[in-house]
Structures are given as structure tokens and as C-alpha cells.
Length: 118
Image (cartoon, rainbow, N blue to C red; front, side):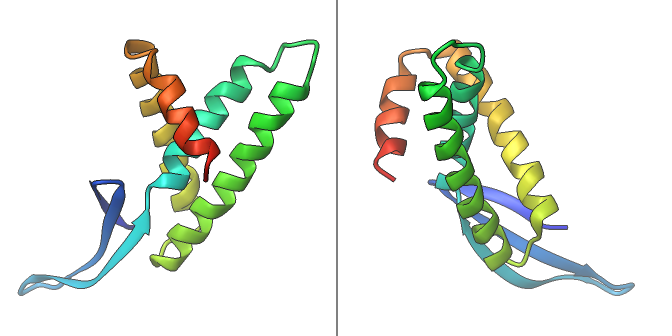
């Protein structure tokens, strides 16, 4: 299991091994947080447009989410994790982003502008 610490948009993950005598860090991995943050935003926006008669906006955000999620999975795999780790981390990002945007609605436009460029 990966231990993850977010630092300025980049998460530092470490795989630790425990022995009877001591606990040491075996390796340190770094993965990019951006695909998780943008993927979470795109998922929330696609959910918000799921019932629209015109599916164009829903399809746009769904496609953006899928692309972000593929990037997120690749980032986690490169850091030594697996698809289960990526799914869990993305769900955590969606939950956190939902709470943040419920409090700070004005941030949606700024985040979307940044994420649309990626």
C-alpha cells in the first residue's frame, strides 16, 4: 500500500517495510496530482450535466475525465502503485473537490480554466 503526502500539487509516496528490529523507508516515489484534481473537477461537472437534454456538455466533461483518469493511472503506476490505488485516490479527490467547490463556488471557473489547458 502506498503512503501519500501531497506537496504543492505533487504527491510523494513511500513504500515502507517493517521488520522486527526497525521500520525503514525502502523507496520514495513521486506522482503528479494534477490529473487527479482535474479529473475530479471533470467528474463533478459531468455529473452536474448528466440529465441535460443536450448531451454535448456532458460528453465533453466525461471525455476530459476519462483522459485525466488515464493520466492519473499512469502516474500512479509509474510511482509503483496499481489501478486500485488510482481508483481510490481519484474517489478521494472527487470527494474533496466536491466539498471544496460547495464552499468556494467561485473557484470552479479558475480551476476549470487551468484544467482545460492540460
